[in-house]
Amino acid sequence: MLSNNQINQYKNDGYVIPDFKMPEEDLLKIEKRHNDLLNKHPEFKNYCPAVLSYDEGFIDICNNKKILDYVSQLIGPDFALWNSSFFAKPPIDGHATPWHQDGQYWPIRPLATCTAWLAIDDSTPENGCLKFIKGSHIDQKLKSHNVNNNKNLTLNQELANEEFNEKDAVDLILKRGQISLHDVYLVHGSEANNSSKARRAITMRFMPTTSIFDHQLVKDKKLFSKLNANKYSNRKIYHMRGKDISGKNNLTYI
Image (tube, rainbow, N blue to C red):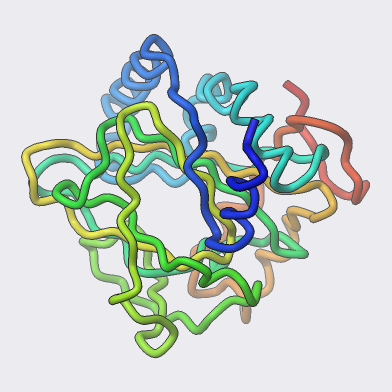
């Protein structure tokens, strides 16, 4: 379990690296599933925003007991998995991810998510590791973003320059099989991968069921016209632990 110091770090800094190592046999299964996915969908060579929509078998990775224990300490005993993404970032031409807050993209109200980020490869500054701005989540508000449709970026929402100071960034350096957990409002991004080594990672997005994943909210053109958010309209929400406190989530039980 997370120690009190680790829980406090998550609250204060917006992220924490637990004492966790995914078993090698599970990492090999992830690699095989990802290779199978790319064979069918080569367009995802840099980024697949919703792997469960293409291979629901990835749910076995997300249903890791230790990871769920950590999440329950941070967002409570009642929560659901609403997404899993794969950031492949291949060698030489791995795309950058612009500075952003995750919540800028998501139809969850009230906005709340704890993301588990699992390193499939060693993640270093050389191959484009994540960078966090410590404490940027504290006010629990979305900051100003601009649209950037550069084809060499994994996402198209980029935090406005005046909203953060890149000099405050810290590198998220992880070994293969390690995870980090971060808050929905934390400012983060990553550089392109120009190295000879891949930087693959899978994310697992958990929300407390006091929140609602609003499938109708994506129809609000004012909020989501620039985000290509129609992909959320049929998104499955998987029950992980506890119950649906809101009573308004259409949960899929596994």
